[in-house]
Length: 151
Image (tube, rainbow, N blue to C red; front, side, top):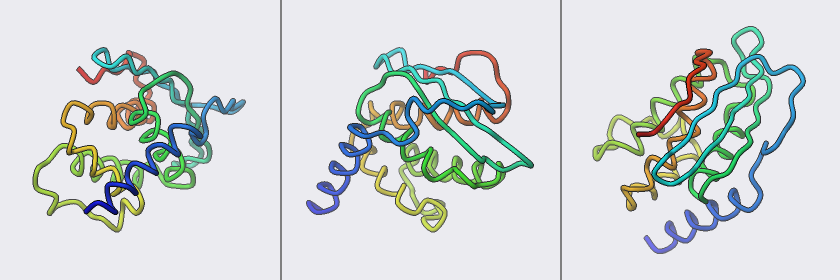
């Protein structure tokens, strides 16, 4: 168990220090959304390029705690090249992984390395941090213009 916790911490710290697809400017963005977590102060804007129902590019900007930044960074890595339908399935599984006590319905094969985020469940107050980017992604895919909040 200690090894898993160390891996969790290492991955969170790596993605926080070097977030993937962060401040990435996209000329052809066609879906965007903004969200924030008022409790923690996390605030991100996500930019997606979707062509033929496939996420061809993704980037984000803003500020957040280590968990929200790392989770959003990991999300951007896994979603490039995925269909919007696949992105929805991943969202459902990550949401289930982070919010439900019973992980039996989570399809680990869909999540791949994202399963490391299950460590967030040890810190219930941080679940909203870990899910913020995912909720913003859903809003962007659905062209929601209002600010997304985890409250």
